[in-house]
Image (cartoon, helix red, strand yellow):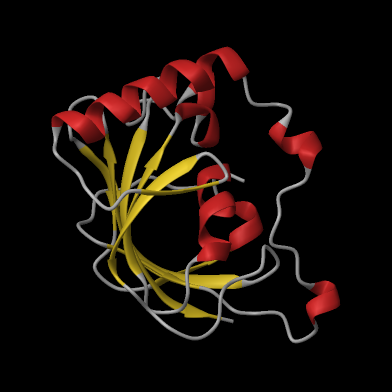
Length: 167
């Protein structure tokens, strides 16, 4: 559920592989996992994210599963399942100060179901080649423990991603 390694890079590309049989394809995170997210902190985070979007005059904001995002380039084709591997180019930043905590210039492959909850909740709505900015509340990121020293506790995150492929 969490990104395993945090390093410095500039862009995020995600490749997702789609399931061959729709019966094996999950696009919804189970409720027992969602129930682990602190609702009070989520309400605080959502207010902070809304204020950030307003203060930065960000338009065309969409929302899925409590995650706000802006599509900067629409893709086409497959959408990932949680069981898929995604190939992604990305840049992850702290909303609080804009510092980059992780990025990549070339696509990296990840099993979607092993990434942070914010990616698991949003990626199944993106088609291959989509570029987007995703605003992730702390509970859907690294939560109350963070990922020291790069990501503090209860940090809201911004990811610029390109979903390169879905497999």
